[in-house]
Length: 169
Image (cartoon, rainbow, N blue to C red; front, side):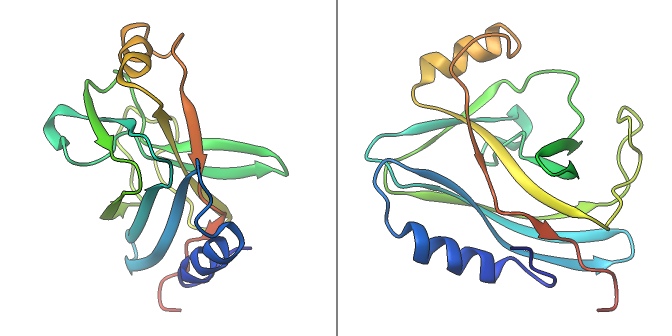
């Protein structure tokens, strides 16, 4: 289910179907709106419905925000490609999300991407989703970072697909 103006319908549907499922971690697209021709605002919520803490990466300069929070574009039926962020170094920070808690990321994103990215502009057409990697314990996160993602027990949470609405609609 894709939402044209926001992800609110997707979130309500997910909560109704999933309910308060024990031992689950969800990434929910709360809303996506165009700010102007070159920017969109996204509100994304990571919900830890387990009884245990989970750990996610963060950058040192944005220690209270998850990083990377991947924006992926659907390329084929079951194929997704990372659009943003473009990483050349692993982040070095960590955030604990307590059992039964959530964190919300509310940010404005530019459609223009940095020069290190293969793709220089996010094409607002097509289906997108958010993805984040999380870890059941801090040791797994540290191993993942130490080996630059080659080992460690990373799990992924993905949002339901959504559309970035055209400007003016």
